[in-house]
Length: 286
Image (tube, rainbow, N blue to C red; front, side, top):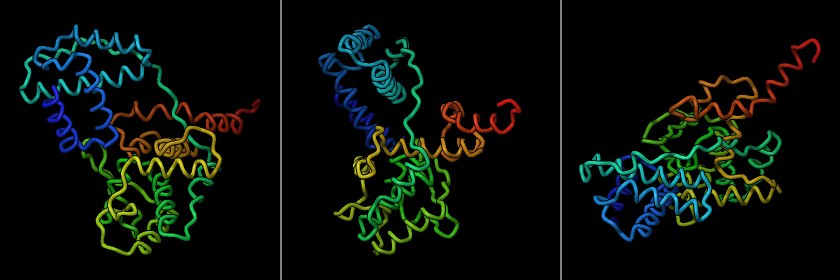
């Protein structure tokens, strides 16, 4: 199974442009399945084998969300094998997907996000870099994998746009606000080299997803923010603040790079502040 797993991981990395974080998760999930099935060849794995694996996960106390994520990795793996004609039948097709409640994402209030993005000390190149990272994440709502994939050639500081390569290599234009433009310009001027990547580490190579997560975590602690905040929480804050200030759902969908509107609709549950204010302003007995 290991040989097929490597082919699959290479496919989703090169063809599908999946993030390093997703690659690590899928690799771990498929390794876990392989160990459970004692290295069984994919051609002889049945739906009963997969059901036993799902049952084992639940018995271990894995959450529904974890089980669904692992099942997603397994399904993608078998779809790849069918596509490449290694298999004729997909054993994962008849596996029931546990239903999970949509969890409202963590997000920051306006004051908290302002404290966070302005917290780096811009007296050093790395402080300027960190300020630019936080400003870009909040200004564009981009995913961390999209941020680390940014190249200098993708950034137009005159028009205030950046070309983003999202999931499945789908491109979109993200908008950089004035503060984000200024932060990126200062950082690139201070950095002063012709490196292809925008955000670099101490070795002058491209930052990784994990490095950006550590940077965000560092400033969350500096600001004494108690919520469990990640780079993705900044993306959630971006969407929530836009909706709270009157942006329409379709526009937010475009800016986030969501394929389906239903994915964006989760943020409408967090737009209650705007709805309550509208009610208070408009209803004569509010």
